[in-house]
Image 1: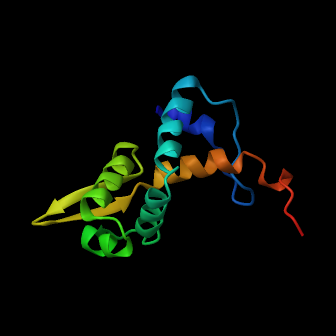
Image 2: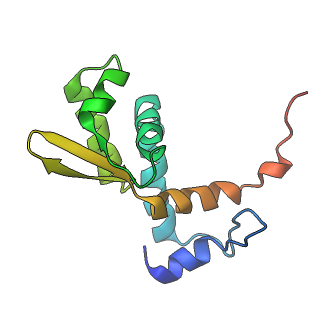
Length: 125
C-alpha cells in the first residue's frame, strides 16, 4: 500500500476517531481484506491480541503455545498466516522465534473499522 493510499485511508484528529477521507481503492481493499481474513479465525485473533497487548515488546513462541489447546505445528501455522497478512513479524534466535505486532497495519485496520460508524450501531439495553 502506498503512502498516498495510507493517508487517504485514515485521517486522525487528536479529539476524534479515525475516519475514511475517501473510498478505498481496489488495491487497498484487497490488501486490507487479506488482513481481515487472517483475523477471521478465533485462534489467530487471540494470538494477535496476545502479541499486540505487549506493545514495544517481543513475545516468544514458547509463551504463546501453552495458551492454546492446539498443537505447536497448528499454532505455527496460524502465526505464519498472521505474518503473511502483514500483521506481525518475527525473528529467530537460536531455537526460539520472537513475534511482535506491526502497529501501522493495526492502525490501518482500526481506521477502516472506525469509519464504519460505530455510533450508528444501536446497542441493546
